[in-house]
Length: 196
Image 1 (cartoon, one colour):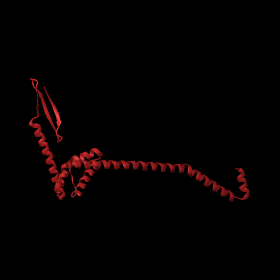
Image 2: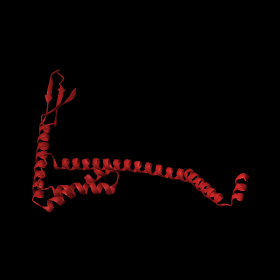
Image 3: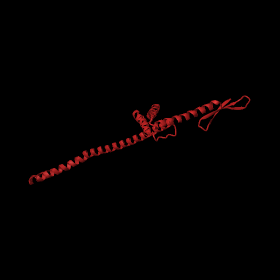
Image 4: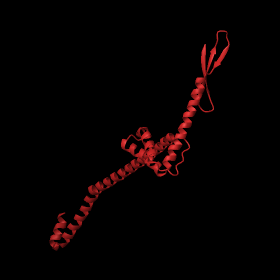
């Protein structure tokens, strides 16, 4: 009978222990060299990656355009896809990724990244996408508010012209008729007033 237990090591990598119950009833635990080799290789890969990141950052901070171009070409496709997932617009995703790289280039002298460079790039893209989406929401709210105000102005104009103007014209016509009647000779004026 066999079974496995997974135990978290202090580095966050799991080491599996294999439990084997032998025929005579005794239980033995095996954790072969494979797991330790895997753990050591992953640790070396992570350490090498951090050293590589620091070397790239150092070269970029020294105005090495080739190092920056390598960083851009190695990461652009996956960062673009990540931004596209958030914003849903290819042109905007391109702009976001290019803005992040432009900011990195502009701040290359004071840039200090303690975590992984790839993680930092993804976090920057994430933040830019969130900022873009918030800005889009503000613009959409402003447009909706502006549209509501324009509809209100159009309604007020229509009401004014349909009701206000007709009353205005009636009053103006009455005033003009009254002035014209007053200018009639007295007898004609009297006949006109009595005929109404």
